[in-house]
Image (cartoon, rainbow, N blue to C red; front, side, top):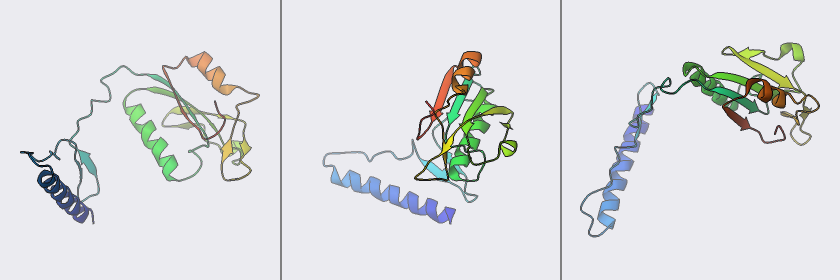
Length: 165
């Protein structure tokens, strides 16, 4: 499947390049499609011709991740996104504190850490129109403010459809 996708993508890109060259009168060269291309190999891994700097090129950062609803107590694409991000932050040597909310999971079952990063949980409520998610105002605890004061993060990453700010 991935080989077919790559072949199809490659043919489509080549056709588009040829078409754009023939449409633009007076143009002497086709658009270059090789500088920013994404390739998918037979194993399904993607590789890009764009180069990325090494993860350890910059000094480690102190990061606060404030995320609601929690991605750490269920399996989903949302959860996978945060786990992958945290894996790369770990490889880069960054220190991360996580503040999240999960009003549905019993407190004894809430995760305390992921990849060695502490997970802080704040009080929250179930959203009435979509009761599968929990939101928070981070009151009365103000854990976000406490973490900011204690850790003085270089970067605060907030992902929230609700009120965590």
